[in-house]
Image 1: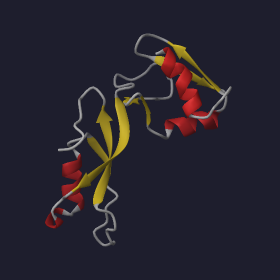
Image 2: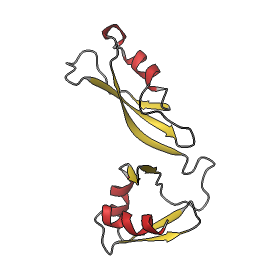
Image 3: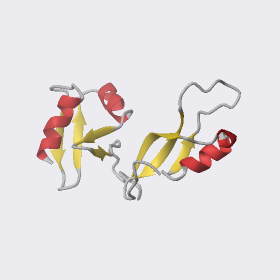
Length: 131
C-alpha cells in the first residue's frame, strides 16, 4: 500500500499536487490540490504491478457499488463477418460486463482488425485475457 501511495503521484506526474492517505489495507485516498488534476486522473484507467486500480471521487455516503466497477474499452477480434452488427457486437461484449457503448457503424469503413465496446466491468469477478 505504501508503495502505491508513493508511486501513483509520480506516474501521474503530479509532484507536490496530490498526496495519498492509507485508509485500510485495501483502500486509500488521494487528495488533489487542483480539480483539473483529479478529473484528468479519473478519466483514465490506472494500474500498479499489473493490478487495475479503481478510482472514484469521494462521497460522504457512497452507494453500495462504490469502487466495484471499472469502465474500460474491450477489443474483440476474429468475429465472423456475418456477425458484424451492433446488436451482435453488444451481445458479445457482455462477456466482460454491462455494455455502455458500441461505437460500431456498419455504414462506415472498418480499418481495424477488431471492434471495441465500452463496458462497466465488475472488478470482483475474474476476467480472462481472451475467450
